[in-house]
Structures are given as C-alpha cells and as structure tokens.
Length: 146
Image: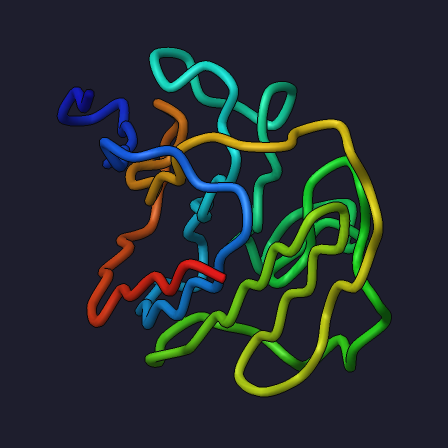
C-alpha cells in the first residue's frame, strides 16, 4: 500500500489488542511519519481510525509532535527533545484501554481510551504526499503479544 512520492503504510497481516512494540527509526528533521496502532481500516489508515504515534518534529501543534498520539496529546517533554538526524526508539505498550509511549526512554504518553480496541499496526513512510518530505528509516521492529 505505497505510492512512491505519496508515501504509504506497511501494514501487519495480524490484528493486535494487547501488545508491546519496540521500533527503532531514523528521521530527517522535516519528516512526518509514525506508527499507527489498532487500525480499524487497514486499507485507509489515518488518525481518525487508529492511534497515530507521531514522528513530526516540526509539527505546528507540538502537543502532537514526535512521541505524541495525534488527537490525544503527549506529556510535556523538553522542546529540544527531537528525533531528527539520529536513530531513536519507540516503546509502545497497549493493554486493554491503557496506552503508554516511550520515546528514547522518556515517557511521552500515558492514557486510557477505548476508541480503538484492536487492529493491525502500520509503519508509515513518505510525507502524506506533501513536499518537502523527510526520509524515514525503520529497523528492529518487534512486537510482543501481552
């Protein structure tokens, strides 16, 4: 599900409810990407039908910047804490209604929500078809079912 220049998603075949994802990523300073969890429509993935753990240092609304969940927020972290130009790690834990995100060992989200109960997860690449767009690289993506 990808279109060169427009971006896309690598979508898991399996659906997950309770899990922990550990993923390493490298992002340019202007990258707009993320990991979408519990996607309710794997054919049209977005922040309106899944939880989007964002990678977007330059996002105008910093409450949903890198390490935040779009439309749900993030715990305040230093504004200098950015992903661009280096390897980073996400640790995302979803257990029933509790979702926790750690970005390079710093907790950036802890919340309780039941909007999306189960679904595949995706690795986003590209920049939503917008230019300019920064590169995203993924490595060592692991999932553990809880």
